[in-house]
Image (cartoon, rainbow, N blue to C red; front, side, top):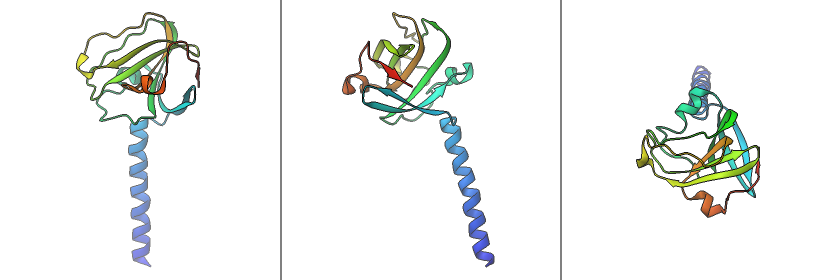
Length: 144
C-alpha cells in the first residue's frame, strides 16, 4: 500500500514536470493555421519578447509545425536568423493573404536582415523547402 502511494506520487510529480517542460517549449499558445489543405500546428509569438526569441536556439521544427508572429500594425517587418539551428521559409501574411515568401533562408545568414517587398501584419515561419513541397505561393489564403 505504501509502495503504491509512493509510485502514484512519483508518477504525479513526473507528469507535472514533463507537462511544464512541454508548456515552456510551446509557450502553451498553439493554434492551427491552414493554407489550402495544409494544416500547421502553430506557436504564437504576439509579444515583443516572444517575437525577439522566435525559433532561436531550437534544435528543430517538425514538418507540420510553425511559428506565427503577430504584429499590432501592418508594416515591412524584417527578420534575421540569429542563433538558428535550421533553415526556414518565411511567409508574410496581410490579413488572410500571403503577400511575400522568403524561401530556404539559411541559418548561416545570422544577423543579415530578411525583409519583405510588401507590408504584412503576420509572419509564418516553417521549415525550409516546405512552401515549395506543399505548393504554397503568394496570393494563397490563410485560415486562422
